[in-house]
Length: 117
Image (cartoon, rainbow, N blue to C red):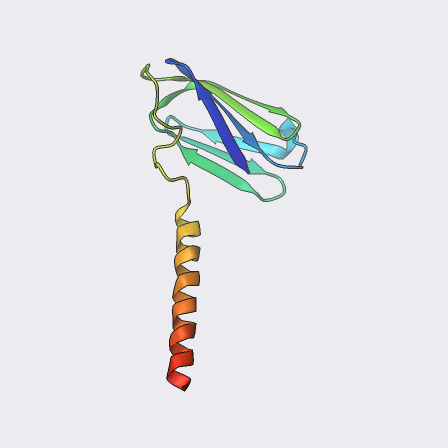
């Protein structure tokens, strides 16, 4: 799933593209708090982000259209955000761990080959 967002001084709008899957309100569940948005699809996929700053969760509107899930909300403090998420690099800790694991396994494999020679 991919995400794009747009903003004004007082609001954010973000779109999560679920790919080739057509969505409806029946197969999507969302949790929204002042700092976090969690999206779950019936097919088991999940997407979440921690917002750069707080939003007014009571103003939040989530809608679906084809493969897009759209969230609109007011910001608690007006002003432009430098990015949507609090963490600059949107790579999840799991992705980083998997990358490090692959590098580690390659290094161990090389070491094992050297030991056999």
